[in-house]
Length: 393
View 1: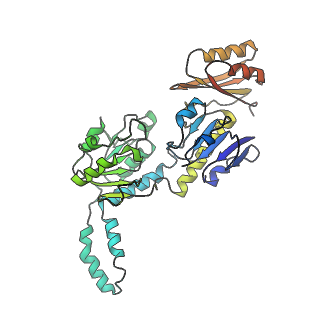
View 2 (view 1 turned 60 degrees about the vertical axis):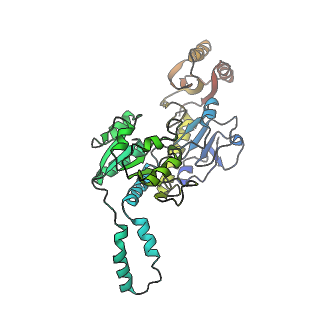
View 3 (view 1 turned 45 degrees about the horizontal axis):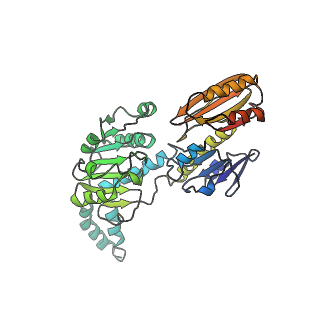
């Protein structure tokens, strides 16, 4: 029986994936095999010796000590793309807010609540609407920084609105490149993207290399009066530099999903309360996706969408399975295979992959691994943890 601790309100559509015959789920339990969470910030008391997996129902993992998890051999999963459509639609709202006097117009109309004469009200509205005149998105240039699951969807949406779309992503994967429309004009660098765009939308992860990416130096290369949209991560933008750019007119608006002290209520700043993935559909998609990934890992050792381990998937056909986490150094796998050979255990199939300083192995064998065998593997210098799986169904 696998034990899964649920640390946040995870959609029931995901939780029902865990069968009662194989899994125990609870908000509070000792020695869980896996944690399921959304925004919960992991603390020391959440990390037990039994833990082998952490599942984040969402894309960001800033609330998880990923480096520590890697050292302990704990696989951290996320759900890239599961909430992409929800974020894309909010970006559309940001685009519309940036060009039309929607917020000011609504506030003005709400101020007219005491007017009961319809003719007088209509006269006031008609006389004042010119204050909130905007411009159309059609024909404007959108610069998309980051062309992953969300960025590519935003680019496609903008093309359908007859915008010119520029894109830049230094880490564009082959899969993402195939997904991207040929109408998106790829820029050679970030500076050329910003210099040519009327509106810039950010879709890059929060990494050490992207922290404070949009700063005074970068902003100086923007078009005068450009609009900046940030529905990605708060840390990517230097808030003080953005405020200075708004005051100087280099930026006309900053529309963000991350309210921060010192920014709220400032001229040109529009902030939503972290609504990017806050739809029923996105929460369900994330919950289902992370549940399926955790189940596949706990029952078969396969890894999909991990932020700290390589993707490893080996179909189970027969025999028993050993899953091995080790430091990515020479001779460990050879030592494991030598132990298997010494004990006359035949290997049916195997898969070995590495990522940075960690390696992961799936080894299918004909006979059930004994406790002595697993203990012998654990004693190999550099082995982090070992799990076994019953005979293939």
